[in-house]
Amino acid sequence: MGILLARNRTELRKLADSLFATLEGASVTQTLGFVPTMGALHEGHATLIRKSARENAITVVSIFVNPRQFGANEDLAKYPRTLDEDLDLCEKAGAHLVFAPTVDDIYPHDFRTQVSVSQMDSVLCGAFRPGHFNGVCTVVMLLLNLIRPQRAYFGLKDFQQYSILARMMSDLEHPATIIGVPTVRDSHGLALSSRNRFLDEHALQTSLKIPRALSAAAELYLRGEQRSSELIHEAKKYLTNDLGFELQYCELRDASMLQNVEFQIETDAVLAVAAFVTGADGVKTRLIDNIFLTRDLDHREALLTLIESASRQEDIG
Ligand code: AMP
Image: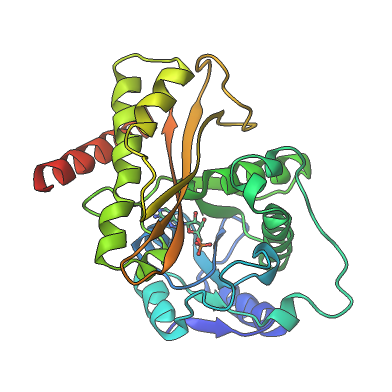
């Protein structure tokens, strides 16, 4: 059986029910994993889907470019849409069903509700993208209610999104377990993103400042540095503004509530960066990235991989 595609809520329910019916000895222990996306899928998304496919009987991927999370001057219209290739990637990664609804199906004309997570949504990206996380929370809550998964998978590349959604699900006692998946990077350390396809050769080179900065701060942290001023200072050495690069923020925040780490890291923290990169073709792209600074050995590997790929980058450059 090929991958199933549902274009609206009614098809989703029908296909999800029929999928469960085909499971041999279907029982309450058979779980459903859910991977929400905006499409233009790449290896980062594939990693989330493969993890879900390993951990659940059924994996559902949603592909929905959510207008409510784009600001008036943002790239909603030009956000890449590649459904045929996306279906192929989902199938190869082990998904069973793709939910790719229309905007009208998700937001009928009488839709009035908005979900928001206060304070955490007004720092980092939220300070520059007002309303963005309300849009994210609202659509994710709706998708969770439609798909009813036991597990939902999100990338730690969008760390603020992950922590806000974790807070939302915990505050509202949503029964699904949220799972954060470490950032997938290219061989130079650049975090994979659907927006990377807008980068020309020049912008690609410039964008490598970001993994280089995060890697330098990660190395310092692994050598025992805990002071936020020192860690931020180290990263900013690499984030100098020039014609092709404009730093929006570089901040150290505690990993659970995203509060400012004023003096030194006490618990897990995240060093997060957002910047605009402009190519020789004049195309300006906003990129975000972060590293998770933690004593948790499970996440050490991600730090070491980043450091290794950034040093490979220096060898080449
Ligand atoms: P998006 O389509 O950009 O909304 O992303 C859908 C999901 O994939 C989100 O949970 C992202 O955090 C995750 N994701 C995107 N890029 C990466 C990456 N490079 N590594 C890991 N997860 C990612």
